[in-house]
Length: 390
Image (cartoon, rainbow, N blue to C red; front, side, top):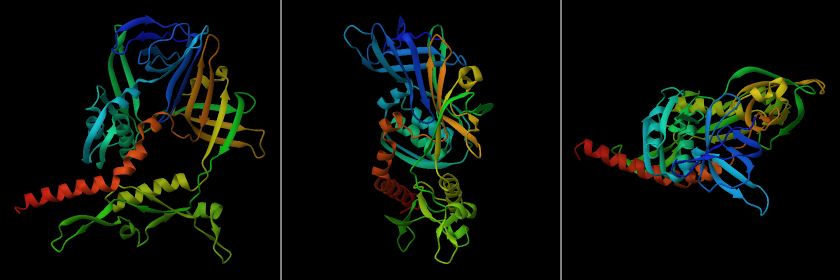
């Protein structure tokens, strides 16, 4: 069914109901896009808020109008993003997060916004990073990157209006609900895409740059080589997967197969054991080709019940041997209309779009990573000198 769209102005004052002409398209992906698009007779103003209830599970959703196309004599087309996009307008000048848990880091970032932290399910491991001259959405994505987890907006409604906006950080969205699809039955179409990423069977891992010390052991403010984990890995600074080497290795010149080496950098990691664990996790994702599947799912067979982040099983008997896929729903596009809803799922891997691009996480972090970290550590060393009585 078409959801009822409750219209509010930019300051949360209710304006009424905005009737959609035709279906409402809801697009969402893990760590990225969450948008709705629809046609309507009269276009709302940019910045207006749309509150609606998901017909699949009854949860409340809030989106902000960011663009309207208004052809003369035809219905207007509205494009709205999740209200998390308002974090693009909240600015974090500087947050030095040192030895913080994910819960503490999330609270520090959201202190710059009107959102409040919710449940955190990534454990109490203490990590750190520097967030410098970034919008709050970029800062939130940085917390996800360093501490793990997948941020999720939760909207609480009472009396016909939003009374609380919360950001939870579960370790992983979705779960296993027993969804199984078979080609020719529940699958109207299936497209398999092997992505262009390189396959590596072994990875070198590098952590934070090590400070240069003077003769008294005091940091000078300069940096040398990055942290490695050879000291806790038998003198070897890489980890490998021999099973992957047998499949994806390269000729070694002696009739055998050699590893395909790559490297990863974790600029905030200061512990060799943690660095080795992070490198092993990265290797699991790098030692096989990244593959995604896009499938059109018939709602009568349960496709519309698959939620973002869920694991699903797909069997394609048209292949010899048959494809038996255990994949994750990383993107979901639903047409919410008068008839049965139609869902298009992307299973496997998807590139983050819209929010990640707008937040400019990678660009901002890489631009200041070395200089800001150096400045931060230099300040820390001066503070340390003060405590020693110099």
